[in-house]
Length: 239
Image (cartoon, rainbow, N blue to C red):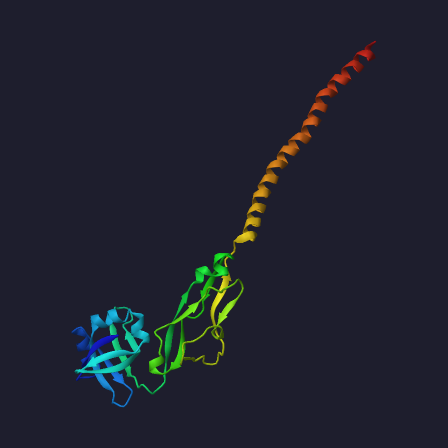
């Protein structure tokens, strides 16, 4: 990736503010054998470049004053609520010096995994990027991770993946952090049994009133026959 920068003569808060008003963004380039150099970039071009993942994680060619230099993006300062880049920092790249930076993780083939396809689970991305150390020539734009082997109840750790050649992970006290965890969202046989149980309960309640009605029916018939049995006994008493 390539971009154009321009030399910046003035520095300070007031000068930077006036520069932003003209549609430019102040910045600096440091590192390597050269001295830190003040630069400025076209704000609109920079704004669109920042939306590309490669601008954040790859070595770029910076054209400055007719010369080209290899640089890495190191820091971006944004306005708290405006769509405005306040300042940007780049580091010169030395081919023989190891780099330390963050690289994004790209997760693929999760839909083909047993956990997602058959066990009603989702893959929770615990980390979206990792810190790595490598030489400039070995710096990857991103690290792709195949999730087709995920199963219910498992987690994918850093030691479970293969890093590109020449790349070493920087874990900062966590030797084997979790990258992806499998989370169950229900469904399957358990959900079917729960649904059938819920349907069976109303059916049982519907039968209960009918049973009570049948139980009362014989009692009503017995009461209807009782007066007929007493009538003949009254006539016998008069004789």
